[in-house]
Length: 287
Image 1 (cartoon, rainbow, N blue to C red):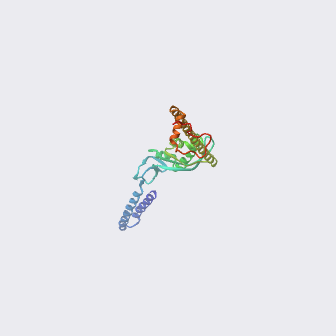
Image 2: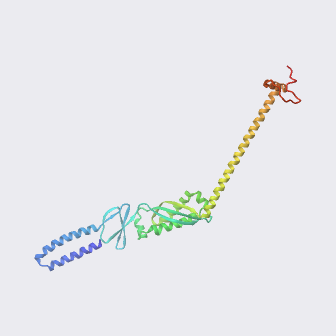
Image 3: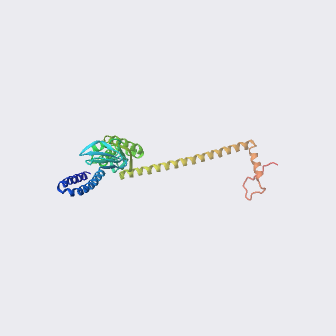
């Protein structure tokens, strides 16, 4: 814009000088050409003064090194050629800190990739620009803050708590990041942990603990099964003993030995055994 303004000024000065140099009869043609060229230059200058602020951005005006208090909203604006406009992105941005390292409360090595989603606080784009004119706040502010907060929060939890309380850990990091970046006019929305892990030795110890726990659970189930089977056998034996006692009581009630002989006679097929002993069944039975 400023270059166009200088070219237009030089051309106007040359036109005025030509009016005194060329003869009077040639000045009309010069004036006509000058008017056309001047109109075109004026259009170019006007277009050069038009600034379009992109969607989801706020324009911060800088006049010869001075940051103006008024900001520009989305869309086209007409600004003087000596004013520059810096676009500040206001929508959500994400910065990923890869392989952030820390130590847990019990001195276990912890690493993770931390994704921080944030926005510039509404109405504070100018203040952010004044504080960070290079607009490199993701690298200069967010990444260092993420590394510092990650180390501080990890040190508050043991390795076992980091494994079992992931949501609580993530919430703690989010709150700490919000407090850390608030003075820089950045508003943290979410923090996500990815590729969360420990050292190889600690992972091996966790695996051994899981295997031991599984074996203990299997042994417990086997013990319960053996106990259940033993209880079933005891219950069966007790039932059979009670049945025998009931049957014996019934036999005694029906006549004792005579009742037994009568039951044996009712089941005899009438054939004598081919081998005998000193006792012959039913000899003493009276008709």
